[in-house]
Image (cartoon, rainbow over all chains, first blue to last red; front, side):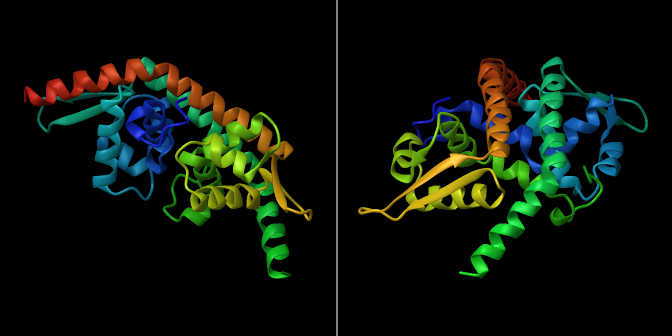
Length: 122
Length: 122
């Protein structure tokens, strides 16, 4: 890692990590681990995401080579999204980290409470 | 993961993940994997970080229970930062992911070039 440089373009890993661990990136990757999904299915499954944010997230992940987009020129037209081989590995890795964070949540929340209590005591 | 809720407070894992994978969070955790460091050492080792951002990052990681802060009331006073047991595990996991992202960078950059070339061809 090029840690000693403040220019983000100098560290491509930083941007890759950002895309993988973004709020919607994590969830989209996780849902696609299940298999191919249409845009509307992803929209439903990833709760709370706007159409615009989902489109943007998918485009970023497609551009990084994590997601494969396939448009079917049928009537009505539809678009399928699936993970590439690289995307599958990214998804598994980031999902493992997310689940670890979820497991540690009680411990982290307890630490925050203790920290805040100590601060408020001065 | 509470994927179906847009309220970030409903998903503590999200915020934990954000702190671990933040630009400076990743680097601070990585440097502390090496051992205890003073603020000024961290500032020097994590290139490009401002004093304010480093202080904020350390405070967030301390509040989450990942970093232990120890102030030494000597002259001149100094403050040591080290990883807690939980922080060590977080650091190892996030650093493994960052290194994976670094390894995949050439493949991701090639995917981006191909994507952009296809787009510019219309």
